Image 1: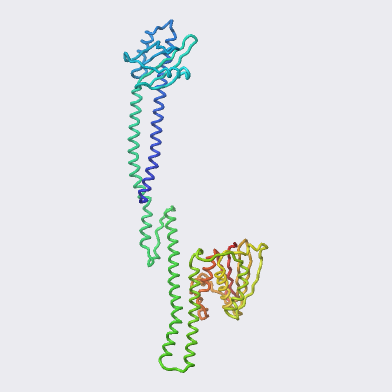
Image 2: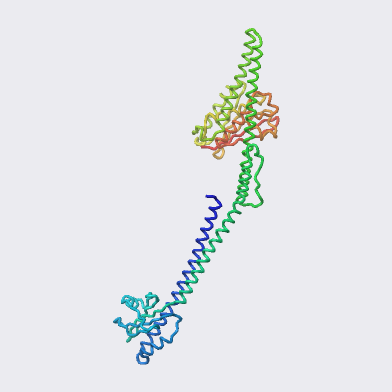
Length: 457
């Protein structure tokens, strides 16, 4: 069901309920007021008749009947009947000659118990009233037709019903128009989004001037488009750089093979070519392994094997791992502010990936330091594990601090240095995958400090 129709139906349903309650309430209170009015009038008529009948010495029944015939209470076809304590009819009057009421004994008994009772008989409404004096007890039944009151109530009911139907029709039309205006920003946003594609990600939605939900939705979608555009640009840059890094050794291998096959050569020449090709192949293998690790960290946390790990045990493996990369590299481990409770040294994560992230940063620190030495400091601050890696290298220019974590990005001064520009990007993805963050501070010709912050398990 379209949202516009759904909003209209919900709006109409709510207003219908409200109108129904209002119209029903008006009709109910009008009905109750009419009933109360006729009950009061009939009771007054019964009380008057009973008092007149009680004055036996002054009034006789014929005189009472004449008084009843001259009394006007704005009711039609009234009838007045009186019964003694033995339920015998002792008095009767009717506007229509011969019009009598057959009163059930239970009604009279009920009137004697409750003093008065209201009931309906034939087309009339009646009140049975018990009048009692020391020497005189009587139940007077006063009945009549409230034709004017019923007609007024029926007229009111018709007016309320007509108003209810007209009101609902008006609400249906206005609700449909209202929902159209309400959803107009959604249609505009939908049209704008449909025009946006992977080739046109620079376009943004018009957020408007009003600070409402549609404005916030447009702002949120624009932020999403910003992230998508950034991701597409990173992906294009990654593919371009990866293709370049892979094509360079392949081109070198192909060229060397073509040259070596152009004529017969001695064994030493072939051996030299094979050694050169072997270096290029090792370079490609190392790049491929790095790309596979990079692709692995691009997935979600749910696809990784996660367990509770002691971060200090991973740190203790760093010197050995660094030595395997290059015998000239060295790292000094320092443990500060470690908690007495060893549970605070545990993290949830993947051991291999965390080791790779920390190792990559330490390798970079050693690679770009003149003494090929780095300092790694581990401490726990406010239930957060903080790993600081410091070096005394050339430092990183401030303009490059925001881009050093991009894949294949390398500082101009370091392009001649061996590497692919994936180490820091890989470390950044791994740490973010573990709900951590990396902070970097650098000063030219002084050194660089990387700080890894991980939540404790």
